Image 1 (cartoon, rainbow, N blue to C red):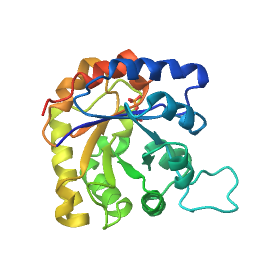
Image 2: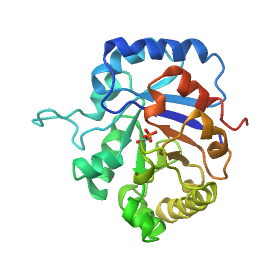
Image 3: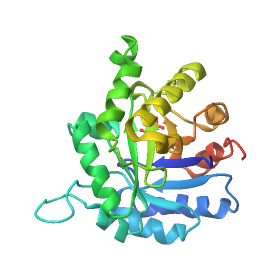
Length: 246
Ligand code: PGA
């Protein structure tokens, strides 16, 4: 399976940051994987113009509604219109700071599909859940609640992001990541049937150039979702360099 390395700028970046994307484009002549960058919504159109097809552009969230009186919200069709081909949904920061439930993430996923976007659905356990040994059941519950049964390999990607590993410099052991990705593969097949075999499962949480190759070479790891280390082209390129050649 061709891997996907996706960058999530979160609430970082203004027009002056687009130089990093120009540098990324210049260095990405023959990437060994699919590359996606998700800037803040304010930069989407400009980022798409800079990327000019050298890498894909995505949003970080969308409304479950298609249009209407929802002040401040952004629809999937608007993301698409600005140049996005994918959208991150149910990131733990959305679940934590905006109270997003599995059901809402599933609704947003349907909205993303209606607009022709690939939904990147995030799951992952908290520190307390990890400590309590509940990581596998927590993620099973998130997959069964957030991933609609009609998900396909073409319209959906899963990102496993343990909350305690995001932005902390801590990562699970390679054995823990491999065991979780095997578990998520089983959960996906249970949720959507045989199609679940082809859905990419990314790892996210403190991925950096120094640990990317080890993580990206683990079984059932089909790419990475990268936060902090996607802000600088050189760091992001260092992660892409760790991709497993196919
Ligand atoms: P991080 O964030 O790479 O900065 O840990 C990952 C994410 O939240 O997507």
